[in-house]
Length: 293
Ligand SMILES: CC(=O)CC(=O)SCCNC(=O)CCNC(=O)[C@H](O)C(C)(C)COP(=O)(O)OP(=O)(O)OC[C@H]1O[C@@H](n2cnc3c(N)ncnc32)[C@H](O)[C@@H]1OP(=O)(O)O
Ligand SMILES: NC(=O)C1=CN([C@@H]2O[C@H](COP(=O)(O)OP(=O)(O)OC[C@H]3O[C@@H](n4cnc5c(N)ncnc54)[C@H](OP(=O)(O)O)[C@@H]3O)[C@@H](O)[C@H]2O)C=CC1
Image (cartoon, rainbow, N blue to C red; front, side, top):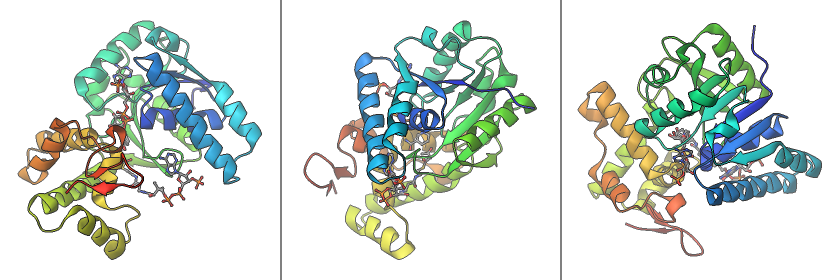
């Protein structure tokens, strides 16, 4: 048995939130996108339109589908605007205190039967669930970046997540045309438990002078057939998010092998967060990306 999902709320309109809104609207669901400022929301709508238009140009979708998907997405600056959603997916920054505050406010306005999910990359689902009034209707629905292009979504149950919530989340993900991988609730789940230590090691390889940015990325693209080099991928994910995930792994598993590279910490402290701030391991402000080391 599953719950019928017609209206989906998405909190956070950054690269992941706008991707989730994009694929949900294309699948025929009504979407309400929330962020802290109107400027962010306008920029997210423009990004979604740009990605939909690219799909039209590639003949992956029709012009009519683009228009209908856009018309299904509304936006709101307040969590009140999500009150009648059947499912709300939180996709704000990877900071536990921010997420807990969102859930606290959200649950006070959201209808009691609605399901709450997080797109967190690493944080304990059980702990986040405990900050809500509905741990049994709370689940991790972890999309991959870029959402419209990646096939996989991880589903993570907290200790209290009930079968109805799990089955409904699975049906929702399937409706979006994505494949499910089920992960137990341990730090960073499956994909990031494997991927982020590789990225962190690439940053150590740079830090220790084994290779420069170009050599490291070329090595993994041409030598291991990765679609993006690890430093290019780190910039794509966001260096703040990469650091947060490594911190969750380091603290959660108490093993020094997950120690975040000091160079990653330095880039984040500089506000060089990758593509989203135009500078990270590459500088994106010119015509083409230029390595910063
Ligand atoms: C951190 C976490 O918690 C978990 C994660 O997400 S980890 C990150 C996981 N993601 C990856 O590892 C991505 C690795 N990179 C890739 O797979 C590829 O480089 C890529 C798919 C991003 C681009 O592939 P490409 O062949 O160079 O580009 P291109 O042919 O232009 O695009 C392929 C598709 O991706 C879409 N796409 C590319 N970039 C996009 C973006 N930024 N946003 C939305 N869609 C995008 C394109 O529209 C295209 O879609 P269609 O197949 O429907 O036409
Ligand atoms: N990047 C990735 O590859 C992946 C990320 N994730 C996860 O998805 C989540 C979002 O990441 P991502 O989209 O990359 O991050 P971004 O930094 O691109 O976007 C986060 C968005 O959330 C907004 N925000 C911050 N606080 C609030 C709030 N209280 N209420 C509503 N919106 C808020 C931010 O606004 P402002 O900038 O103004 O603070 C920003 O627009 C994180 O949990 C991350 O771990 C999951 C899979 C892949």
